[in-house]
Length: 518
Image 1 (tube, rainbow, N blue to C red):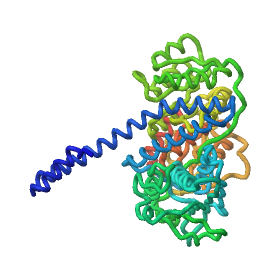
Image 2 (tube, helix red, strand yellow):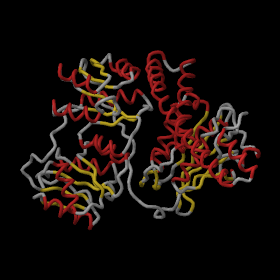
Image 3 (cartoon, one colour):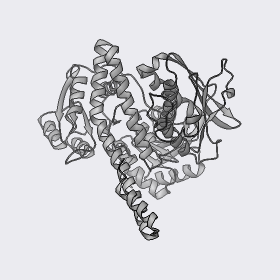
């Protein structure tokens, strides 16, 4: 095998005893390695676009003829490719993901559902034991990936029909997760290198899954390790048990998160007009074939083309990629709103960020789809919901009432909000929990804490909508994450604000979000 040039220079310098040359060669080797890793991650990311098309069409075809034979194998291979891309991208990433208080049970169950979608998982029996609710400090999406990787590893270790089990519980005050299988076990040759990249004990694995698990566990300040089978009481005992031990509550910084959405609306009426904007032809084709039987699908490769289409006639829904040549998807949404304030827009992106999620929400966009899509059928459900949803209401405070209901149990935060609303000529009614019944007169707006006790996260959003009775609402959180903002966007919030702003800053932001002059 040829030795890379930077490594050859390093070896030569070491043999010659030239320390300055060795340091220079080592620095060059590090730069080359980092650049190669970044390039590989970018190439793999670009592969997601054609892979998305293959997966979407395969899923649509499976609806017509069923998932069997070659089609079943194709879906399994697509899932495998997506997992490889996701694993490598996670290993190559140097940025820690945002964390907040999340339900471990919820995300383990989501991973179990995703595990069941893979046809290859049908040969094993999966059992999940979660006797109590467990909250950990973490990132929901990464916890699902951690669990799914461990489940996939267990399934692949079992060569034929077999059994896989997940047990959630506590060790002392620390939440813990066990993933067990009844396969052949881990050999001594592999055991001490199990969590290193490209080390695997079975022919099916890529050797990346457990390395990613270790990386995710470390980001969550958790300990991932092999433990004796005796930790579980099953008979016969499992051959392999992985344990993920999370920190005890209160030992890491606390904030908030959101679970994945999921409501199933009625089918959209026929012949509504859907405008799909994406510079990738395969993506436009997917949407045309996905929705063509239910509505008229119009295509545009750029935002400029889309605006020309809008000048020719209104559409019921715009689905646009964020990164377009020329005008971006967000700029398209802004201009579409200028042409028609009631425009309904969904943004798609393969490069999600908290900033663009915030921008999407403040523009009043309906949703924010992440590429590659996990399941094209879920995308179709979202499109049907968007096409039949009521036209978005205008932002601002059209009501005569000057009262703003503030749902916040933190006294300092409630005081700053009261001062901020007073600056806007509004009156705050502070509530530390859900009232027994809504007030007779609806408020002009609602400000709700994401971490409100008893109505955490999505429940807090539901409470804000109920109390507001159609009034705009703003979400307040100790820590803003992309997941939180997306959940608030999908619930119809006007915006999300960090709790630590002072009264003047809060007043400015509330003025902007509620359309109330400061």
